[in-house]
Length: 190
Image 1 (cartoon, helix red, strand yellow):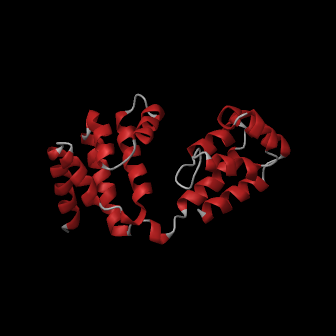
Image 2: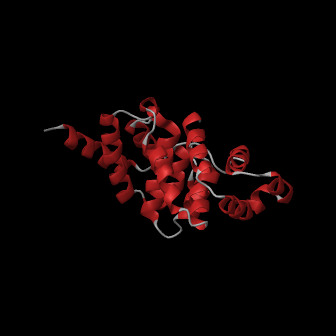
């Protein structure tokens, strides 16, 4: 959370007063008129959005949309840098990331319409799954890829490819689980 707050501070310091007015206008439906009038700067706005769980360390999508809408695409790089610099303790080791990448490609190619059930087996909430549905309404492969991305964010350093295989089997996707295991074996043999 601390790194996230440093990132928000950096963004806030780069916002003009007109930018803050625009952001408050765009967020008025989420924060209410009274609160909108109380907010004087970016930090106060971001703090309130964190309290309302609209943005968070693992949820920068809304912040990206807001900055894009006010024409501050230059600030999106700050978010990209933040997301690219996860704490080493918060991400799986390189070998596990390689396995997860192989599994992701197989799952994306084979899972199909059971993506939501798969997401639930990975303990993603319905709100998160509905958000994925809304984000990619017509692209099944991107929905599956997003489910795995959100699962990795949630599990951080505890993300293991075995969990993906177990979730596949739990929703009767044994063929896909078998293909994942086969691809992992092929990748581990020279």
